[in-house]
Amino acid sequence: MNKKILIVGGIIVLVLLLGAAAFIGGRLLNGRGLTVVPSGGSGLRLMMNGGQPVSLDVQPAKNLPQTTADVKGIFDHRQDNSIFVGTGKVMMLFQKDQSGNMKTSASHDGPTVEAVITSQTVIYRDVTMDQFNGNPPAGQKMQQVVETGSVADIGQGSMITIWGQKTGDRIIASVLVYTLPPVITK
Image 1: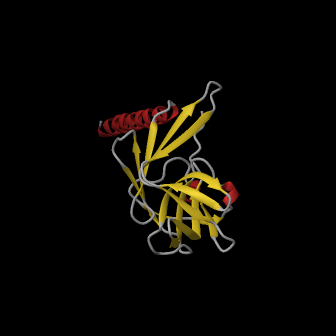
Image 2: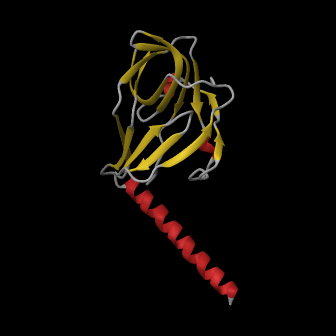
């Protein structure tokens, strides 16, 4: 009898979890927003349309500066040897076009900062989330994983973290880490 109750209870919990996952996935696929707020260290808070935040506790990779980054935000545009980074609260929208392809757009509520990329700038691509098949484990510390990157890969929807030297209203980047935008399939 107790075994039946455990099995039925487990099935109910599983159905509830699948329903919640379908709800969140549906909101993303139907053009709902995902707010990304850089927090202290290399952590992020993700909020679905202003809902309850989900915090990711990411421990910085050993080969990155162990100080607070000078700029964190989202790629705005590129001009010559400069990348412009939108800072503050970042809102990313995911929408399907008429052919069913996913389109992303992003906005931010902080200033746009110019980061100058030189031949001395070390560029890394953050591949931390590539190790997970789906969502990362909730409430656990994750080790950040980076690999050599290229400024040519940085584009719309890329999250950017920069350490460097502030000169006037711009920053000369010494280390730049970028994360490609999330891929959501139909």
